[in-house]
Amino acid sequence: MCGIVGYIGTRNAQGVLLKGLSRLEYRGYDSAGVAIIESRKLNLVKRQGKLRILADVLKDDPSKGTIGIGHTRWATHGVPSDTNAHPHLDCTGKIAVVHNGIIENYLDLKKILLKEGHKFVSETDTEIISHLIEKYYKGNLETAVSRTVKLLKGSYAIAAVHSLEPDKVVGARCDSPLIVGLGEGENFMASDVPAVLDFTKEVIYLDNHEIIVLTRSGVTIKDYDGRTISKKSSTIKWDIKQAEKSGYEHFMLKEIYEQGDIVSNMLDERLRAGKISFEELAIKASAFKRFKKIAIVACGTAYHAGLTGKYILEEYVRIPCWVDTSSEFRYRNPIVDKDTLFIVISQSGETADSLAALREAKRRGAVTLGICNAVGSSIARESDGVIYTHAGPEIAVASTKAYTAQLAILYLLTFYLGKLRGAISPPKMKKLIAEFKRAPELMNELISEYKDPYNNIAAYASEFKRYYYEKHNKSYFLYLGRNINYPNALEGALKLKEISYISAEGYPAGEMKHGPIALIDENPWVVCIATQAKTYDKMLSNIQEIKARSGIVIALVTEGDKEIQHHNVNYVIEIPKIDELFSPLLVVIPLQLLAYYVAKKFGYDIDQPRNLAKSVTVE
Ligand code: F6R
Image 1 (spheres, rainbow, N blue to C red):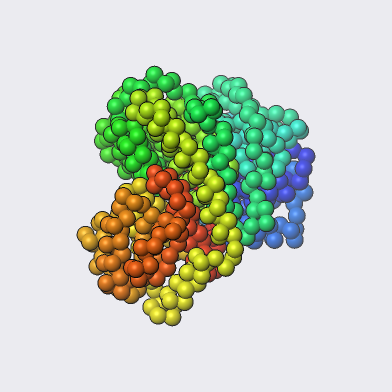
Image 2 (image 1 turned 90 degrees about the horizontal axis):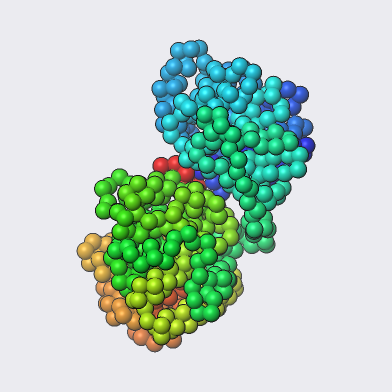
């Protein structure tokens, strides 16, 4: 949600800011802007629309300054427009501010500022910050920012500059991410690591209620009471190339294709002589032995991974487990206590609701475990222990590889806990691990089938479009799954609606008769996950019920399935054979590709779908 960048050094700030913003565009892309100090004047340029529109404008009249701030926006307060785009100025035009987050008390503060004579031009909450800094400015930007942030309620990461202080960029954070990038004779701040990786790999992660001052020669960090804080920097281990398309048309396709290798690398890293190792995990084995229940919270795709986690944890660890969306968890009165292992799953590690849920669980005494992709993220740092998925940077807004990586970690965690608590015998463990090790190769086998652009899923997407336009002028998808693949039905539907804007619903197939069957006629397409032995016959009955009502069925079956041809389904997708415990890792791949090819047929912006942002750092 909104990306901010700040730079001070000797390079051309415009180039650095645009590069940084391009790496952050996944966070929001409805408008963008920069403010650069040049000859003690602010050069402000901002435009509605994607970053390239701003870049084109800047190309015509480049700024020469070496200090500035930039922003890419995901609108919260005020429609996307040139005026509402950041940076926002004060009345004097000397102070510029960029912000990620929501200032909840902005109306109260605005009333006071209006009474004092300040003039506002935008509808944003952010603009009050520039005016507050103006109000408190007495020749030192840092002091003015420090007085301002104490008045703000809500979440924010901000960066500010003053045209008469061309030797510093000041930033602060509260519940929105902010990192510092350390260079030689130059320094950076940004919402996320990729923004600085073209220039440095040395970063400092800021914590809440910290104020930073970047100069060319250094960085100072203080708390809100002015006490200096000394923090260690970390070296980023991954390369910026991983955040590039590398010849693929879309990040989403690249990330779908990476999934087999990610799971393979994870097994190489985590399995040592048949033993599961979570090196980074700070929770002791003895703590894992004593809890009596497991709670999992997450949002969106990560929540679907959590739902799958419930099936496997209950089956193999034999502990009660419930799963909640973070936003629901935090506003009910859950029974979470010191006997609870509280697992929060998050790709970004910054999702506001998940972070709030984690804090609530800690407050109630639970042992908290984060499963995160982004190293050093807030959830990773605030959990008692963290397990990283190491899926590499996920750039496409629609999550794919983070999901399979989360599933893979949940399998490993299940086996780890099952063994530790005596629920999985050594021979059983051996068998489970041996079967799990087959998964990455089968995932890659499945993926390689779909590398042919004329694959069957692309053809189905094409037919869907024709059918959708020619016959009904609207259509929708229903995804049905059972048991361990029910969460994949939810995930398939989520992927489709996110990037193709087509209505899609995931349902446990057994529930079809309790409502969704009323929707079936010749219009909707029904994706039936029929790969599992345990529930296969039940799914065939569902298929019959859909066909009896003229529904169009895409069946996902196990390779070599001879039965499905007798059921009059319209389309078939085959999945390599694996123990059904691990089938979610395979089944989801064609579901991701179906969403991808449908969106592609409709010509939508697959990597940056409308209204969405990758990291949801506001409630
Ligand atoms: C779906 C998607 C979102 C995220 C959700 C949680 O494709 O990307 O539903 O899964 O916003 O994000 P994280 O995992 O970063 O907490």
